[in-house]
Amino acid sequence: MPTKTNQDSFIAAKKLDIYHITSLLPAMPYHEIADIGCAEGALSVPLGKLVYRGNVVSLDPIKKNLTTTRRELKKARLTNVKATHITDEPTLPLKDESLDGAMSAFPFQFFKKPEQTLKDANRCMKKGAWLSVIEWHPDFLEYGPASKNRVQPTDLRGKIEKAGFKFYIRHNLSDMAYMMIFSK
Image 1: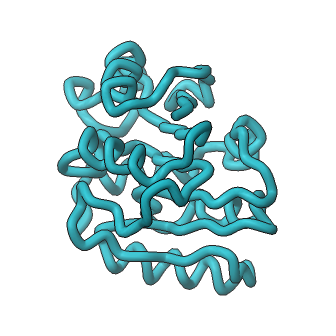
Image 2: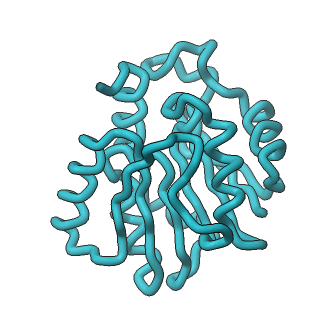
């Protein structure tokens, strides 16, 4: 059962300008991408359209979310996106060095062990691959997780660099969220 924080993250993902987000990604049409913590597929469909010659694997630990994601993918007639269940959360069911990029929206509210999950994402990524992480702005308090559960941009950068990535750029997506892009 999703927690209130997870439900807020689902709502937040739907309120973001998805096409603005995809325009900021260093993705190419032939890339192999993972949507880590895909929730109900709000990012999976646009990512599938973005990499129309590549593939997207949408990963989520909640089976109900994957059912909704599959329904959205079927509506959009996307055959290059596969929704997959994460059975052992910090370990992703992907081969070593198989990804050109990965996306994760609100991983520090969504996963039990976000640092380990993102470190495992590093294992799955090719040299030069990119990782994009969206998180709540610490000072946006209308809804979302408690302010003590939000990750400051400097802390997020430190945690992801500790997982083996190099910082590339930060974008403010709205008053509600920011996105950071890293490279391997």
